[in-house]
Image 1: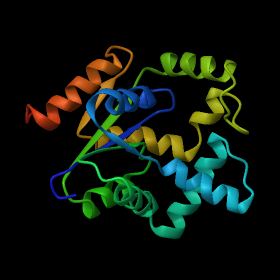
Image 2 (image 1 turned 90 degrees about the horizontal axis):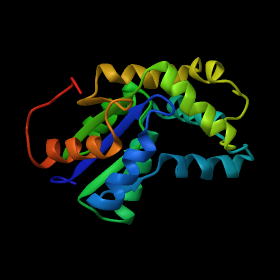
Image 3 (image 1 turned 180 degrees about the horizontal axis):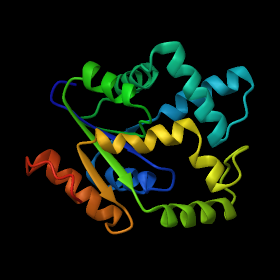
Length: 192
């Protein structure tokens, strides 16, 4: 992976990570590595319910057991299975995870953090919940955003290479700027 590119997405629940990931994948040649796939395999083996809260809890447990390296290990295994020059991870949630990616993966690592004002995130969450998205025991937005995993995920804005307010910038514009940063401009713009 010496000349390859890995985009690490982070951000609050409902910030638009999945939309950005989909556009990077669909029209820009990125292959997705899935930490959730790894967690779901463990959950099935252990008979754990598969929902957002249970997966976050299992990820937290894996963080403790592996010193936060499990996302890197799971990603490396998937990268070997399906070689590509452009990779995408939706999403990193802890500072130490980002550190391990930067330390252990050769090539260009671009950490992109997505956020939006609380009122927007709350409204998006409610739409998802009304549509039947599974949040486990954290039924309200307020309960979900108080989870330590979510709190730390939001703090990654402080260490990201690029940050975008998805209430003012579309997913398509985020993707254009990510591509420009990786393959065009060398300036790091955190003001967007």
